[in-house]
Structures are given as structure tokens and as C-alpha cells.
View (tube, rainbow, N blue to C red):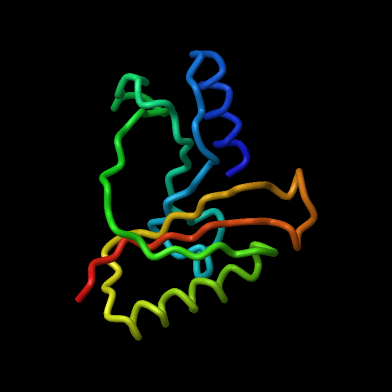
Length: 130
């Protein structure tokens, strides 16, 4: 993941692209139940709206569709993210939300910047109200 993020940041700098938000990952396999080498995910950064869309090559500029999301901010180790995922799933069931897509994790800081217990990660699930 770090290598992909470094590629994205290098691409943005080389192309003078304005980054407008923290990095994120959209997971297509469960981070809790899948070996790291078997993970399927996209790594992304939010860029300015005037950046031209590009759907070719290793790095693509795409527009994510607007949607309703359940969200929680997890403070602490990435090892404990499963607790926040469970809390969100329980909430969605109790409040009649149907999860309709892949989870997204937004990383507000990194283990290179802060102590593990200070990590901040927002988890989002795209949902519809049942």
C-alpha cells in the first residue's frame, strides 16, 4: 500500500496536480480475512475538480459516484479496525441500512507520522435505507 501511495503522490507532484484530501483505499476483498498478498483494492487520493479525467494507464483519474454512506472514525491501531467494522455492520442491521458496495478507508495520518494509538481512519460503507 505504501508503494502505491508513493506512486500516486509522485504522479501528482510530477503533473502539478492539486491534492485536496487525504489518501484512501476501497477494498474489494476483506482486509480482516484476506492475506496481504491476495488483497484486491484501489488506492486513491482526492484531487482538484479541474483535473482531467483519464481512464488509461496504471494511474487513472476517475469520478466516484455520489452516494449515501455510513461512517465511523476509528482511533488507534489498524489491527483493531475489525471492531469498528463490526460496530458499523451492527448499526446498519439495527437501523435498516443495506450495505450496497465496497468499504472505503480514509487515512488522516500514518504510522510514520504518529504513534499507533493516535492513528485516525474513517471507514465508510455505501448504503441505502430499507
